Image (cartoon, rainbow, N blue to C red; front, side):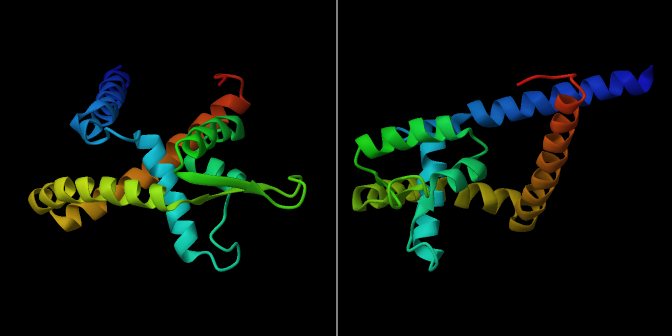
Length: 163
């Protein structure tokens, strides 16, 4: 019984901390772009810099997987970014071989401005928390997220949970 109560407390605390982090003041730093759009632009920009194979293209399917979104959700977001002039959206051949996005100069400027805001904030946070603590925390968060995703998949397969 005590172990069950302990798990309930830990589950609540983890859920609460994730809520606070996603709700927190960091959102106030995102005035011209959402956190989701920032992540997408960052992924697209990194592909632009590092991808010799795809000539800076980020395929929608890859973006969808990296952001853990459905292709439909990713398409909707990409359409909004395109409409705002932050990305270009194109396709190979007749489109059946894949659609891809590339970041525009306006997208790069907005991303750089957002990154500068975050850098100023996190520079102070990391200084106070400690670089090694931050690296350790991020590694542990990644491990936890992997375990949580795996558990969710197992629950879905067992019919205990539906998306």
